[in-house]
Length: 72
Image (cartoon, rainbow, N blue to C red; front, side, top):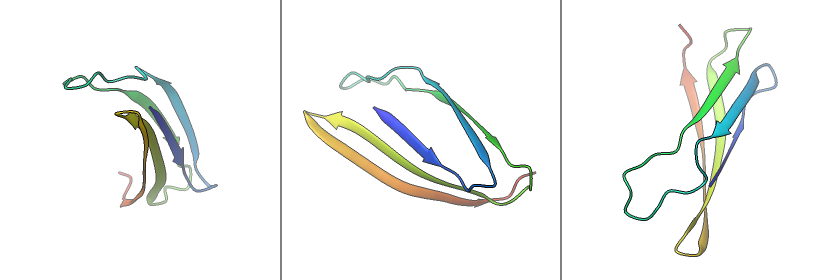
């Protein structure tokens, strides 16, 4: 399992280590990863993400975008 994030150039993103690279089948366990985002201009939060993982021997990929969260 791999997570990739991209933020605008005006923001800095730091990603910690992932808690595990495997989630066993039929498991209720989760994988965690700490992410810190430095947003000095207090802009709306925009992130692009890509998650890749193996499922039943097939490599899967999900991509998407998160936007429009106002910093408090």
